[in-house]
Length: 319
Image (tube, rainbow, N blue to C red; front, side, top):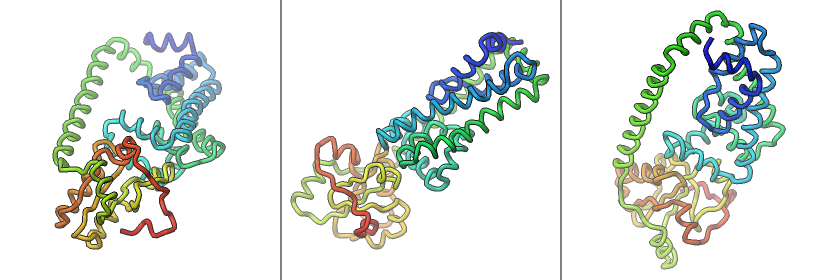
């Protein structure tokens, strides 16, 4: 039996609860091996199976409820902060909101089985105004299935896990180095791909000061807000005169955009990657006066320039 298993046998539910809670709060603590070991110990009578399941589900709910409340109170800013810590911060917000809009609360229940989503779905549910009771039901169900799977696997395959524990005890440092090596390689590949994309999307951008001067001078402008609908619901304010259009819709209806005035695109993602990507594709369609807004909506607000409520029922969705 490995030292970790011996330690788990001695401290039981406290260690399992702490590991699961730490993982749900975003700390680099792998809870699944501990859950497997807990299940194996429960099969041998060293731990109480029912107690372990209850403690793990409770730990999940506490951690997820904290993120849920932060999402409800801090809105899309909290989701953006979490996304900045991910491997793909430029597309994290849009991909996550797309998943939630498509699957709703089922995405919350299933997110624990998808790396990268388990910490993002709870604040997203809070941003969308999901009731706490509904959130707890779906999140509790997902937590029960997720933790229960690992615990029951450990319970059912106790004999098979014993040799694995011996191997880990003897070769743990080598296996750890191998895992770390794979993690570093994966991170390096993602870093290189991201910077290649940023170089590809490198283009002139209009500053918020330049845009404001054009507005005050009365120039003809088309300003398009490319933020996900999720962010608009959490923060329903736009740059004056802006209309909201999904990126795909802008590309499909590019022929409706005038060629004789500036078209300014903005988003709220790091490096303005969404607006830069759409601007690049529009330029390839012979629209030469298309500009991503440097700093996006956050840069506009940093200069204390005015915003206005989005006109949900006044044709704002059209170009």
